[in-house]
Image (cartoon, rainbow, N blue to C red; front, top):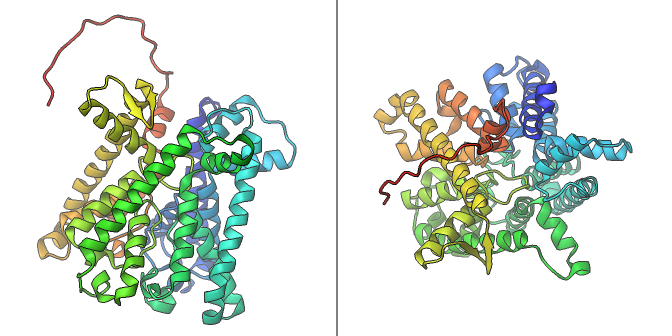
Length: 456
């Protein structure tokens, strides 16, 4: 325990692991499955990891397989995983008026993505309050459509479940018994209220806790932090580009479940939803298997990017991608420094961004290579191709939940690979690596001779 407490990153990494194992135990119980026989350890572990890491990949349909008890367990894992283990713990500490030690405050600061820890307790209380308020509003909006379909009791439960799942960017749904197994929101393209409410919730959740706090303080400060500006600008760019690309690429795609099969007035909404959901939301209004390869490639890129730091989303984070992008642009324009929105970024931010992106790419490509061996039979028969496996790996690492391969049809080896990817994607590969380091960062005590090599 002392080794775990020695570093805040270790508390976060092992905290998620404990919650996943607890969720696995509860989901393995016969009372969690409708057949009263239990789902087995691997399926329970996969589902618990997917829920805690707010991913949304499933190996059994959430509505058809799990009992109400199992669904409540999944809902609880989503809420805890979305807020973050340390955030939830800190909230209860502050509500009980317990004094937090320095290590606890630093851990909470890392969990929320805050720049300092002097006002961490206040920020955590605000995070939990805003979360519950937004989820309540989202549930009420869903209720206007779900209650008429399912009745009061069932309609309200589904409204709460989908509101929490949407806000936490989890992608779990309860529509399997209504519109078919693993159908997500494909049958709701004609329901703008459902799609727009879902998109609103996961976009707010993906902005990050620091951005919320900054925007709420705007009336007092009349200024917006540089971090907030970067997040909002990059979000706008990605949404606009994705909307235009998917609308052009998929407009005439007439395969079953594709955009071209929808009435003309529904296609712009479907394009907008497809442009925002890959950045870790996981709900889909289009069949991802029906997407053209160009759309799958852009979706993979968006899943790798993710949303903002300190949010309910995953991926390398939108600011990491922004730093790398603006560094390339600055280099092309002949600047020595990375210039972003009129500001110069420290070099260590660029180095950390490259490290995170490099680790993410290595993990996703390595996982895809392993899956090409475990899925060799399906690849040989033409049921899958390598793009589908790369899509699946990026979805797991980005904690997205979209699937073009059909996760339940994959082998158990692939399930195991995806489970590890979901966990690493939620805690962050860099944070995981640093948490396992026995020694602190090496201080530069030696001066090494300079080396030169050709690049490019």
